[in-house]
Length: 398
Image (cartoon, rainbow, N blue to C red; front, side):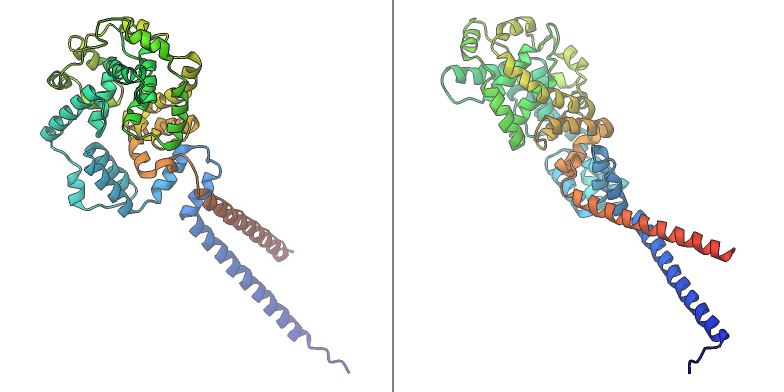
């Protein structure tokens, strides 16, 4: 004999079941909201956004900068101080503090160099870079670049490396080739238009080019110089190629030219100060070496030199110098150029912190994919919860 439960018991059972279902949905909704808040306030949300801005170096750099530790930035500050690059050390402190990092006051104090010390050190280093072309400090770099701008740097390197080449000795093909390009692109009466060639040459001499860049540029430079034409050009006259001023003269010139001007490629004051110090007939130099480089190989260099010049014009010479140590090809240089358009005079500092990671996702792509999967799953859960809520409302108002 079947026992039929009373209607009140059945009703109570249904009410209990409905209550449990609603509790479960409530818990699911709370969990969904909690995970949403956690996701949108976490670095994962920034990684998910990178899926839509993966082509933008600035977005990549900003995401990575937010993830740096205080100790890591402090180590880079120490590195800059050891290199006597106090300007960059101060910029590292600024970037770190903007991202919520606090540094030892003693470390911050060490990033400030006295004006007297800075003037003396920069003068000596600038003069050394100008005369010898060697680079071991930012002021050295400015001096080497200034010498190339005034043509004497390129002529000096042509004399040194070119003499070795025509004598059958070992010579630096890239230094010689880029020096010849620098002279070949002279605008009579002014400086060279190819800043990129000068920066690449200086980075090569300082051994700061990345291995892929060195290999590519080395291949091009081996086919760049016509040795017969070079021999003829170097033996064409009994006149010396140039007259290099002494250290004291260059140091005196620096009193009217700041390193900041050189780094930002503002050569107006340099031109004015160097008129008597460095007399060079640029038109004659250009004519003398105009046929020494092969046009096909010179054309191949354009992507490298123009990309480097773009970084230098937007982010400064140091940024261009540092980008050459991290770029593998002209496409990388173009991405560093795009970054420098947004980061300006902080570009060198950002590259010091992030290296190639400033422009490429690299292994970060896995974080981006994981963040996207989480975001999609969360959105599906939100849609399901919204639909359930709407259905419950409809049932309630029936």
